[in-house]
Image (tube, rainbow, N blue to C red; front, side):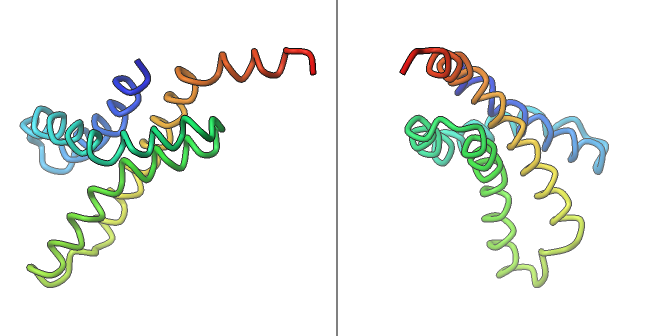
Length: 125
């Protein structure tokens, strides 16, 4: 459940940012499909590492990295072909998506680990 719900937050935030900048809602299905594909490639291995750590901090950072990494990769690829892709607008979008990924990581932690953490904390030593 956590692997389905948590990636939706950064994907929808990126689609919303693009919709507000371009005025086109065509980005929603495109980013939804490619967002989940990137999540399968990058997010699932990060989630596997988080299953070992189980801390909120690791989930926040992991969610932010998993959400922002595809954009950073695409920015570097376009940097080599179009001259300068590292504009302040690009950095702002990456920052918004990183923060949305952090929120997604927090949701992942709540769904996957919050109940287990309470059970561990309440168990006698």
